[in-house]
Length: 262
Ligand SMILES: NC(=O)c1ccc[n+]([C@@H]2O[C@H](COP(=O)([O-])OP(=O)(O)OC[C@H]3O[C@@H](n4cnc5c(N)ncnc54)[C@H](O)[C@@H]3O)[C@@H](O)[C@H]2O)c1
Image 1 (cartoon, rainbow, N blue to C red):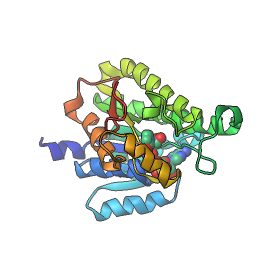
Image 2 (image 1 turned 45 degrees about the vertical axis):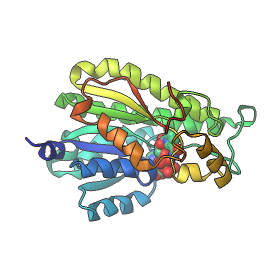
Image 3 (image 1 turned 180 degrees about the vertical axis):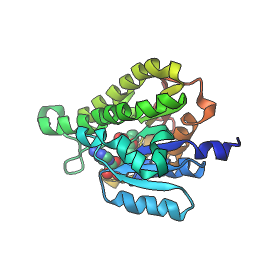
Image 4 (image 1 turned 180 degrees about the horizontal axis):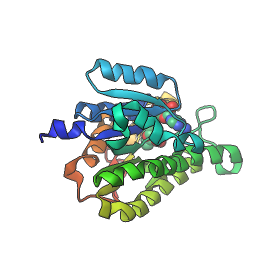
């Protein structure tokens, strides 16, 4: 089977794919021939999938709040309903846990000393527990086919001190790295790899919540001299989702223009 025919048998599910990095990841995987399912809590996800279909990609949309445990329980049935004879579920091979939030108040993070418990809990629920729930729901399909890829979109904030995101965000992304490491060991024998991509500062709606002067100052500190592009994160995810990454598991790929070097 050639690469494109093989990719067509490997459905990819990308969470938080209505826009930003998630949409770029779905587009890249779709361009490589994977049927893609874009999952997002926003209605906008329908238009994003439509946009990808107009580009010739086999894309479908799902409304999903990854932090809603009941909704995630229904995910296998929803995926089965998306393709003929359960095809999207039976062919599910790639999961990208990308959905995430980084709340700001008046363009700034809240300090730990002033952070409401509800804000802390929501960030952990979406960024960490959401990835846990979706991964747990998808594992039966990935393990059954004996070939699977799970990619967590973490952050430079999981790797080192960063001034802009809050402590909840850093804690959630560090937690995601730990989840990936343990899971990688648990499913390696079943042909499933689990890795992280840790983006630095990437131009998206999330980073635009901070004022342009702050982003310009941060860009000046990045060796490459600019913010990253969503497509540059998508390329790293696509590599980790490929056959070429078969001996890579439990690892983190830094995509940050040289801003942090481990
Ligand atoms: N942009 C950056 O600089 C940067 C850096 C490091 C990591 N990241 C991570 O990359 C991921 C994507 O970030 P982005 O910049 O594209 O952000 P974004 O805000 O532009 O997009 C995030 C998407 O996730 C969706 N989402 C949020 N909560 C959800 C939920 N509960 N269920 C389902 N979908 C939900 C949103 O609707 C949105 O479409 C996030 O996990 C973020 O933490 C981004």
